[in-house]
Image (cartoon, rainbow over all chains, first blue to last red):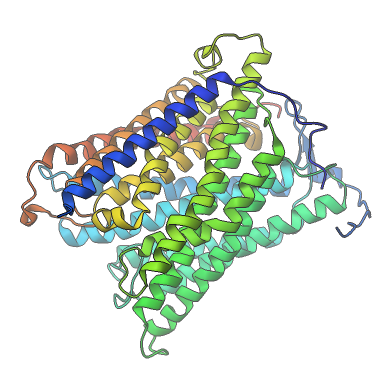
Length: 45
Length: 506
């Protein structure tokens, strides 16, 4: 099925890229914090 | 692909009006149905919101507003009114809008739409009466062996049949619009997102029938017993995809708001459509994350469905999370705005749709998304399950995300459908900020309390011996109050516009 665009435009979105990196860094931090919580709940002996 | 019929039926011009601002041809029977469903949704939101503030203040240890029995009763009603009635009624309004108005088409069988509305309304009223009468204190999940009054299950089934009819009507409308050549090429991306929501909605409602019909028969004594393990699996084949209908509809609304407020166009429609497709293919498998502590299921089943398949659906959300801000950035830069974040600092922050879009995306992504993926992990779920961390996650997704996005859309849908000027535009400008900040505080209070071990669905935790949780639970009360104020402002704007708005041409 045809899509409503003739050709894919070239776009530059540096601001969105920075926001995406901030989000990924935040997500990584949350994952690390949760595994810290997990190790406190069940310390590896 | 099969050729579609090219029998173009003439439009009956008396059934249509053309909005001079948007150029949309509005099918009047569709318009009436959109208003009826949207108004019913707002009434459900008000009822669920009143229950919400009472529940929030019961969770604050210094207040403990409600006695336990009333707490559980209202918690059941709050979950059902908000997660089902408010959102589905609004989504049905959205489906008719995306299927008929956006495609300049007619709603094929308006009578069927009214039948669907009556069934859904009857189901919602019946269910509420039974819940408030204390005959269904079974929580939103209604896990057997807890048993409610038969009319509770019957009410849910009535509502589901109505919703299924509405989805069928939407699908038929899109197909007929295509065959009558009301649009050229593919459907607009917003309608495409709504089609995805409708497809997920169909298997959601079918799973709901498999869960609730036997439970109804059990409640009237026609089935000797219910297997709780089987019920839990089938219930979540309904319960989780029901939220993914919200997810797909919310993302469709995000694209619509980005277009309406800054004129954004998707930077790559194919990628956005592919991301929607990922929801259809994989989101239902993520339902298993509700059952991560279920003793009836093996570890391999649980981990395979959650830690692998669920991530494929998450990829879809990550694509949208990049695609929509990128579309906004491109649209802003086309206006000559420069600098790394000039497109954000010079964005129309006073436009309620733009504020709702950004706040909804931030709360959904940073709070709801991260916590959802993390808590959906098998190991972490063992300590998060049945704590306030879980409601903390889904209040960020369904309320901070979906509800706020729907509120933002209302400010554009309402004047278009009622042909009346928005009353209280100044209040509408600040409403997304008030509601969003309230929900963010509420969700963070729940998450923080849950991390300390505060259980969910518990009226009184004084016997648990948890120390230091009073402060974080106060955040639930504070956030709930601010969010409730935002909710009241939204409802007042909607009702005032409907009743007292100045007539305008659109």
